[in-house]
Image (cartoon, rainbow, N blue to C red; front, top):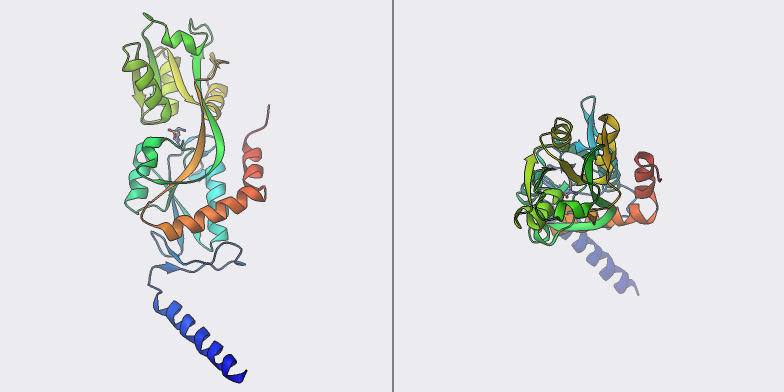
Length: 272
Ligand code: ARG
């Protein structure tokens, strides 16, 4: 029996030494109560969860004062908290987020980002945490009354979108490539909405929640009842950092399961 205990102790020592040996300067150790898997992982900056986003997308991410706030910012803060990390948010163009994640400059892209097969080839998506809908914004007196009007031969509408979002990708494939419409691409959704207001474009295709926020701020605009397409939002992570992916995804799954994510969403989006 004694021998067994001694052996066990020796084993424990060897294991903990091995654990020490494998630690690198850049390795973060979870420091919370440990309910997220205790695996080790590395982040872009030691002790920090770096989130890449494009803060032009209320209520998921937008700038208030000089801070990025919104649903994604709060979900990221909750994930960081679970993993014992500080959260740092990097605001950039929407179409720079995947590159930031792939190059390891950012640990996670959280930006109301839709899971698409093309993006799945580039990044590892976390569990989905919200649903989005592509909707069509028009002026109140617009001849466009349904999504079908965009597809009707001969109309050739000019459609405003945020560059490289799914609103851009879908309308490009479905309409522009078919010679049915022209797509005008903007760096921000609000710029596309301004272009609609000033008559430069005939409609804007964009996610429903920012659409609601923009329409409430600009007079004379409305959202069509018919939806363009429904989609799922998830976090984008590198395919080359499985340990971090596992830790972040486990934390997110816990936050979904215990209702934290829903309560964050409910804080910003009131159910109609
Ligand atoms: N859901 C759309 C997409 O993934 C739009 C996301 C835009 N997000 C943003 N933070 N600007 O393409």
